[in-house]
Length: 162
Length: 473
Image: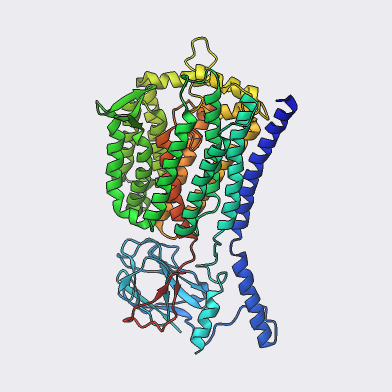
């Protein structure tokens, strides 16, 4: 085996190793923008619907009539409080950084979160001790809620209002 | 029916809400592409070793390559069917490291004075890799939801402690190279500590998910640091004693460091309180110093670290490894062209210096980058995971790799005192290889759950008495 061949193998192999490393990095890089395809589709859809309306609106779509606009506490220590949904996602808990701060011993510091995806509102438990209930069942993942759905957190019950 | 019309619109708007702003693609094609490249890395190294040592392509290249490819394809197909959203980069990295390790072990097998003549470590390593891939497939196929592991919190913890104590039992425990971490059952021998580290991650995660609030909230502030309450120190003290026990009774510095570090990192991740790091760091310093004072084993390691070239330095191995790496230089001697066999145990703990000698700094940086990417994918999984248990498991498993690589690479390059740990996937060693494949399977299971788009909800009027229909995509 000639010296030159061995040198070529040596550098060739290092090149292969680095090609692999850089390919892995490039897959990770494209994975960061994993939503690109889906987002492009949604944008195209928006564009299409904008065309159908006849004018290109750059502003965010206005809340539709009948969509929930606020969370109301219907039962518990803070009952009667009303928090607008405009600032979503809303953190619910006993901590000082919570948007909906509950004076309730059965509520964790960071208990649950209300957020939207498109037109749908979801409540998500953040690993609370006593759990978050939608209706009568304890939720384990983001759960869709709509107007009037009772969300129970500790001794407090919240619901979405128009 | 305007409602149904709106439902179809919301389904296609993943970028709209803060809750589900990110939809991951499956990326199985990208994984396959990287896997092919990783096989080029593994099989190419095998061929280059043959060319470098004997001047010809090894006779069993086809057999070796086909075996390796079959294992990797089996793992890939399992992911396609059982965890289709799992991270696309993890398996290729593991496959490349494993292939490279096999080639290097084979290279030391071929060397004239490597180790007892007639042993064939590469072949047995390939058998262990097969077992590892079988374990990988079993975990992915048998465990459909990682949250089920949470119910085994205390079982896993107990099993881990029993496994850690097994080598101390007379009869089956055996001291190898100064460390009492092996058990022998007839012809079989393995290191139970390797299995214990998987179980400990599960046990820590399950425990911390439940007790996070108590550990995170109570405490007082001393000098800008929130120190935890005295009575919450129980678990960390227990873990400290276990680590110290491993150090004193089993003479295993590496495992002791890894288990304590793992617990500390998971505690910090779950509570977000630097106070725990302060407490843990102090405990570690005290334990390490006590270990240094009482064990001759540790004293020898520290002396070899501070003064390896001294007159009666105990670190012949370390010195050989450093000469090897220096000889390798920037681009290495070329596979099969160096003489890594002059370092004792160059096929296991010291495989990284062996690779450094033959692939040079360029190659070693690539390998360390691969480990960094692996750990990054694990931490990324922890970040995007939706449940806390999964977050902690992923962070813990990534930490296992990170600590293990840091301890062993730092040890062989004389950054920290040398401690015996295996380099994940590269080193010869069956228990470690199988355990690491199982860790990867668990990581991919969590990753699959984390990257899978959340199930869609049918937009029925929310009647509280009716059952909600959940459609899984």
